[in-house]
Image (cartoon, rainbow, N blue to C red; front, side, top):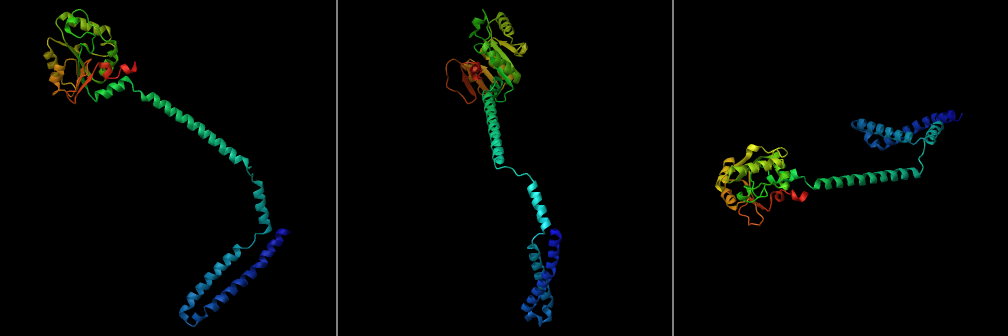
Length: 282
């Protein structure tokens, strides 16, 4: 009964609204009466009246209250929907914040651990960095690869330095490596080849036996280097280093004493492994 009563009330208000619209149109016509004497303004006045009537009708209908049955329906929909408690949002926000904080801390720790592990380069990375893209290397044996420092000692024995094996292995992975030395007799050659084989230079390090060269003079070694045209030459003799300075891109002078740098392409180090950083990783 209440719903039908409200509908009847809405129907009764409609004539009243129409009468108001007619009254508004009359007032507008009175205000524009000055223009009615001229027929040219008839269309404009009529259009203005129509726009005012539409605007007034829209405002009037918008301000009408809803019928009782529609208001009850909206109240039922509103009360039936679950309302979150005041503590639920804060709880969910707090828990999500804790989760983000814990995940962020673990992620940051993973980054720190990964950086710590990668901060110390491998021997292969150190060798590659030092060689600066070089693809061919020539190297003296005495005092660099071998413990012995003069040809006379080679007549008695030949001993490979264990500390250089890792460097040799990494160089052979990246470059074409040639080893060479001045010897006094054939027995010295055999001792050197035997020592290199026993140390695993040919098997483990990957060096080819045919790339171990021998000569009878220091100038002969310098001639070998010039013929091979390497990117790097490693030697203990300062005279050979000086002689090759104009022809070789980079040279490494192995000497226990610190020498003044002769040229920009000549480096100096007490040992092969120190220059490539191998001893720092032991």
